Length: 377
Image 1 (tube, rainbow, N blue to C red):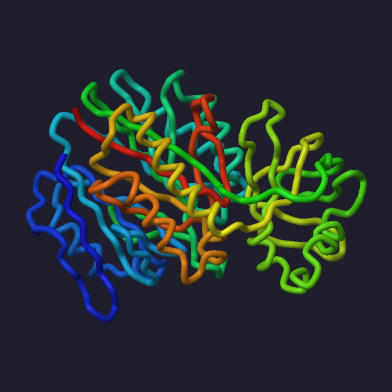
Image 2 (cartoon, helix red, strand yellow):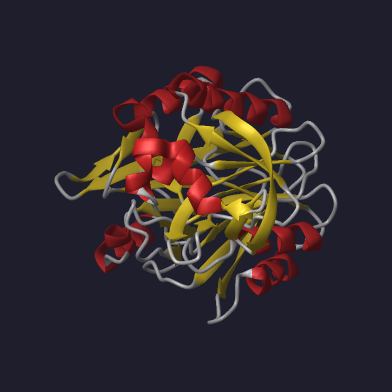
């Protein structure tokens, strides 16, 4: 596997981190701000460098290249596999749909003999990540997992874009299939937040809108627990996600606060909140967030079955970036310590897609560092 990485910034233009030759590259992962993904000139340059590659990616809340985190840039990672292949499908997300149909189309196109893994990038504002992940779980064969993320728009939540062999566009999803017996793929997804307060029951919800916990207004309970931080909702809610316990002693699923409705006393989260689920509030612990990133890297290596990877795609959450602030690169440094000289690329998202524990398939996560590792043998 040969890897070429580059960075573009408005101030410096392209910074070549590796040789320009790329006629044999099969895949270019491109992550950048919405503004960069809309620039036809940047895409045209990528196409000139990598004439035969799939160029795919999405808009972000921050771009990761090596151990640096950038904003309003474009980071690209070109991959030339030695003995493996890829295929891809771009699916539009129709009005009044939640993305489930798009996931079904991805599986329909990509599932065939030799499939090892699926990676996908979705419009983060129109796709319901829970429904999308559930459809992938149902449609992918046993033993085939999917990872990826929901595109972001910094902390603006206005428009998110997906790129697939053209400038970025909204209302679409790209799925990439990886094929070949010589390709190894691992994954890991870890949060690192501390839970606090009593365990509560979701007594009224609809999709990703939570109305009541233990028969009381969810918003009012949040305000009580957040105290002085409640005046900044929903933005401050990114620092206080909700943990949905899985009932089996596992890590559970974390859900991010996206919005509030004072009139109904409800809260909107970055994934479904099923009625009857057990939930607990969480708060930031800086050291544990950094340790969580290292844990995701270790899990990615364990599932890879090797002590090193050639490429790691890192997808972390915008909420973690807002909490860690000037310490944000510490979580990337933690990944580097585990993965060594592995090529690192990725972005900050509105949601992370990764199997949960040993279940395989795909789940929507919030507020995690999710890492997908690749290596050819």
